[in-house]
Image 1: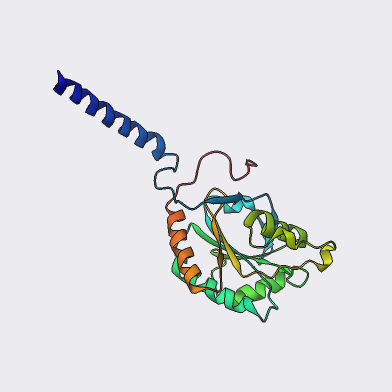
Image 2: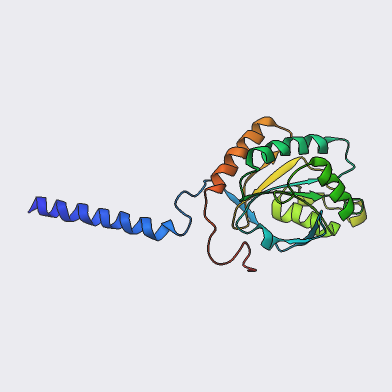
Length: 215
């Protein structure tokens, strides 16, 4: 009797495990990265260096690395983009990885200027996109979606507002901002980010709504 009961118990356990596997296999929970979710990408519409509209919908299914810079910067921006190039070089053949470089000086960084800068970088702009747009929209995304600048830095007059940040953010395939902000000037944090990117690339794109439920 005890052997039969043990057999039934083992069968039940195996059945539950098999059920669990097939239920969660398609949801992306299996193999999910342990990176915490900080926020979600809100709706936006900017212009690429090729004067093509780029919205949050274009991020779906991609792991995105996000940064802010400006083309006339002589300080940290060249160092940041040299470090970002190491990310680009490592993942340049990965179709699900996208780098998004936003201008924090859109009054200067027009579409033609961003095009000139992108050409000077000699990168594949299908993998590394340079974005410009309205200053208030760019700054809102930096502070309230990506978290690469403190919202407390907002000033009363938008004309006097300026972002100059060294931080990168990671967005998963479902529009969720994941993990910490990464200091783009520190090799140790770049190494960590590369590892985290690999973890996010293994995740599935969830079915249903994207990010904040707009889609």
